[in-house]
Amino acid sequence: MDGFLGTRASLGTDVVVVAMVIVVPVMLASIALVRFRGAYRAHRAVQIGLAIALLIGIVIFEVDIRLNGWVHRAEASRFYVAGRWNDLIEYSLALHLCFAIPVIFLWGLVIVRALRKFPRPLAPGEHSRSHRFWGRLAAVWMAIT
Image: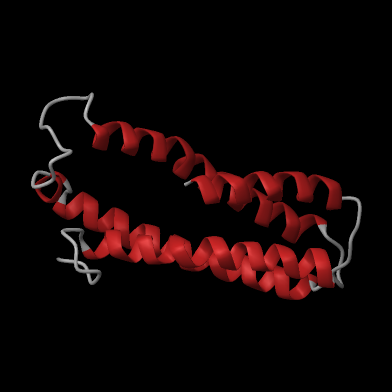
């Protein structure tokens, strides 16, 4: 199924592209909410919402790619050379996957640990320093992805 952004990309690809364009700035805004305003509950809600939205987008993308493939869409590109690992598309995909796959687990771990280790009502605690470190790392990796 064709996407909605007017390119050769599939629907699943367009969903993930739009999701990432939205996720990264909203994630940064969520970090700013907690850092500068102490809005812990809003930060938690936004992070969980973003994680769920991105997970749904990734599932749509993966189902689309597994069922329909992607090579037939890439073949029309002047950058795609069939059967060669040294083409720009394969290297770009490999580099992207080096960040995209680990960040799913990293972000998930940050969220799960936060839900388990922060006190109720939400407030800074013993877990804050660790959460800040791993959360920043996850945010950077998400932006790179």
